[in-house]
Length: 492
Ligand code: ZN
Ligand code: MN
Image (cartoon, rainbow, N blue to C red):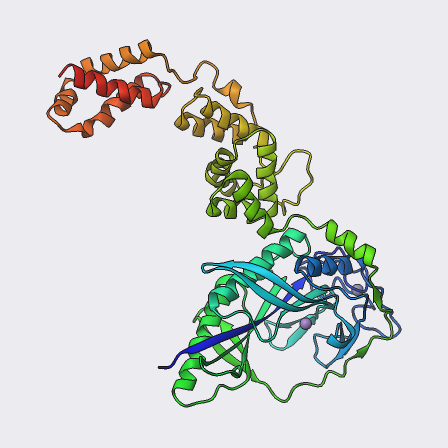
């Protein structure tokens, strides 16, 4: 079998997290009773006039800048004309190559298992979403226009494509999603359709200069499906070519249950959308000073943060990745370090017990005094200050690591001061005290002691455990261990 190369172009549609729709004041939300968030503008009734949503334009501008795009001075809205029941106006307001989308000629650096890779971005543009066709239980179909007119950002990768494997396809989507969520422009909920991606997939023999015929894959609702779908198409196309066939240009759906793609429609001749500038909307004008102000106001982006955590806090790439995966989590970490926490200790507590407790209780990590969107989850009582206090009690030997887990959990549940919880039960490192406790245990357990002395040192753990038990876990474990070994070896 000859070698094949894969090429994947990715088109991503992201719903913007604005309060209202793109050209009217209808609310943007997910779900709800059909056709309850509609008005003459988003229903395209005659005479209704659109007013562009400034917030949406700013969001696309910020995304374009974060993706290292050029921003034109003037950018125009076009009408893309086609007829489909989910499009009430008979056209979609969109943007068109020739008159400048809000961003073009950019790139996203992604990290892959084979190192960093630059994925070229052809354009970032603003358009509006369509309605949804619903198949009714009693037969027939209906249309829900709640989603019609929701601001939608389209991000398209360069041609020829830079993505050359299913892993890169998945990482591109995952890291683009992370960026959009960091920027606060999209909630990133693929399962709710607020981030939709459509890869164009083709293979060609390794010695061929020209790209093969592509198929477009729809309905990918998770990173895993992007990976599986791309890999499936790669193999399917290779199998077609290997058996002497030709790949047909078609749109295919992804069946999650069977993990296979299926034919949706063959591409007829390229559709004629009769693009023309929308006469109801004035061109957008981007003042250079405004663009630079928007660039300066961008938050620290995930890749920069990932690198800084390794350089500044000396964290491993894995630790840095866990901490920076979500912006609120990274900010919580930074607040704990600012409160005097040791970065590695804070990292371990956060990715260990804290993450587990948040998951178990369904709560959200919040920083007191900082407004955050917990998406309906109850805020946890654990604060950066409390976590730092627990970490310090361990670091200065006041409590054992084991005791600290208990204290942490209690502080998590109550929000109480950890120092007050450990009063009178701090770790004992007094040499005489430990020597006596060890001697007592040796005297009380002649059989295990004899076993140890016959060379079976495995019982040492049991004997140390007895000392810990007598001292309610307060004796310093390494000291107990050392003293136990010393006394057992000495008197044998
Ligand atoms: Zn409306
Ligand atoms: Mn589009």
